Amino acid sequence: MTDNISYLVPPGKIRCFITGKLRKDTPEENVRQRWARSLVEEYGYPKEDVGVEVMVRIGRARKRTDIAVYTHDAAHRQENIVIAIEVKRDDTLPSDDKGGDGQLISYMAACPACRFGLWVGSERRAYERLEGGVDRVTDIPRFGADRPKRPLRDDLVQTHELKSVFRRCHNYIYANAGLQKAPAFHELLKLIFCKTFDEEESGDDLQFGVDPQERRSTSGQRRLMEERIGPLFRRVTDRYPFIFGDDDQIKLEERVVAYVVSEIQFLSLLDTETDVKGAAYEELVGANLRGDRGEYFTPRNVCDMAVRMAMSLFDQTKLTSLKVLDCCCGTGGFLVSWLNNLHSLLLEQERSRPQRKGSPEERARRQVHDVCTRNLYGLDINPDLVRTCQMNLVLHGDGSSNIYRVDSTRTPGEWDGEAHRAVPYGAVDILFTNPPFGGDGKIDDGHVLDRYELPKWETKAPRSSMPAEHLFVETALGFVKPEGYLVILVPDSIVNNPGLRFIRSWLLRRTQIVASVGLPKTTFAASKGIKNPSILIVRRLSPNEARQADAGFLQDPYNVFMSTPRTSGIDNQAKPVYRRQPNGQEMVDENGDKIRDDQIGGVVEKFHEWLGGESSI
Image (cartoon, rainbow, N blue to C red):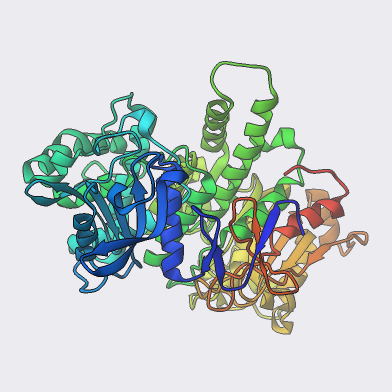
């Protein structure tokens, strides 16, 4: 048992955030607990003023509202309920006969002091009870406020749950804007860009916000779009011309924009923890940009493992000067992981230094921005993934200006001129990549094949075509400078299939194998990707070592780190798997959150031990 485990939860139970009592672990209960946490951590209500599954008398009937907020410091009685909240599963519609918003409105009517109500299901709906009846508003008020309002900078809060917020926003756009999932995803990202930019550039009076009066009226929604969001997006396009074109615009009706703005206006995307943003963005991408060319997006636990292992191969003082590239970057998982881990190191350094201008967080953020703008690169052939990767990097700290649409199997001479000039081909210190293994693409262009060694390796006649996934191994190594490192995710077939022995033979003559990590079969269960994946870390030979290898003088025997973690945190159906005691009780951390049964993260510590160093990566 590790130090961060404070108590145990029996199987099938979940600990209530408000009361600490055990409740049945169901999808509905998890939604309710997330909103209970949100009321306290984001809306600011004291736990003592919040009740869970509260009895409400409606005539002779007795019902239960999911969550109730009482008058501050008042007794938990029906007459003191000031906010009623009903939370449903994501697929529940407001018009649903049993679980729709009519249920919430009846609870509000039965509680004499209840002025506001919140219904959350397929969308979020807030209500205010007025003399003439119940009216829609943008949100419930924050603690201490009389009514909902547009946020000022001091009103912004971190959030521990972005997945459901982004999901509701996307689903609302999809349902109300007449767009397919992928276009709806990109329209949402434009608004997320506006939100992030506003936090960076605006003063106390933020532009990304909507007040209740604007949200209710067509003229107010138009004013929001014309006076604030539209001009904000034009500033975004000026800042990021490599992501947006001059003619790019937000292609959503004003009412849809107003809904999305109301959902995320009080959240601070800049200050929210990177893991929370990463998980939310990953889910959003996975739901809307499924790979159909063998593109299976790398889980974050794998990215973090690979990045931290590679970082530990270098002195910490050199990490800010390393050139880092992913030649099949997809949505940017490896690049974002490098950025996040670098930020953690720099933040730790800044906190240990004497007081300087600005907070340690601000100084570390600036350093990461500058370092990644100089040294972080990404390539992908899919233009949608290029933009998605750029947006992902912007959301996490930057490096977005160095992402290019490129067919990396071709020589730099065939690339777009800008990419040709910018990308340090053959000079990269570390290359991370998850090539599109499993696709059906073959390369039979003689002009392309002729530049590779693998088509001619250990064969009497050159191979006239090869799967792109096999050539990507040599493609990736071509970017790496001598004595630099390649970190590549490959199917086990490349590691042990007798028919692919020639690839292993080539690797042993061109690189030194540093580590081989056989990942669990469940690793890619969420994306239906590689069933038997491995991570290989190899060091490209120096010119002298390569000449000796070509002359038949192989390297002296050396050790290779090997590991086979058994669990990845999910099962074959991509459902979470948690750590348990021998008696079956689930383990939770000091915050009451269940601990994933994920041995992938533990590989890093074993690798540090194998290296013989005391790394803090």
